[in-house]
Length: 195
Image 1 (tube, rainbow, N blue to C red):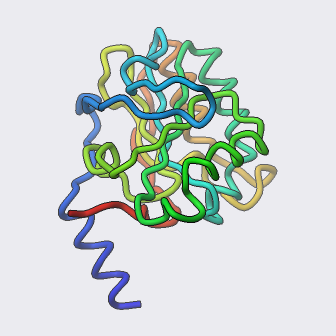
Image 2: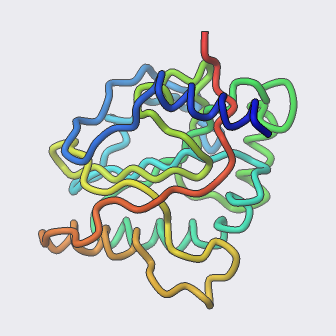
């Protein structure tokens, strides 16, 4: 346990998380598990911005929150924001987070949004993404306006009191100030490539 805590602290120190107001990092083109195309994040931007969620196939937190993905995608589209999932789990590439497994997972769960493979965790490192899931919302000028969690209850949609991401997306779409710009992300540590 102590080793895992040390690793998490060292990874977060090595790859600091983007701050509110920071610009969307540049990215290389990545293969997409939901289409035969490859793209970088900037090419997938909506009229009002881009929602990037670091995700994976098997983390219990992702699986628990996955019923929110279609809801979030719908709210994002209503506010002219495009949603993109990114899998940065380099150390699981030969197993549960291989590209073939990503394709199967996307098909099984009827993903209607891009699910990109960050082959060597470069995007996760540029964002300072820590967990799956970890949410980053950028406005039309590629400025970070919200980061953190989807909502306050990963276990049960019916028990959600604060749907942080929904509120942020609606505020962005209505050109209002986002009241809660940063929340605590909760999930599995990203199995990134660190060297």
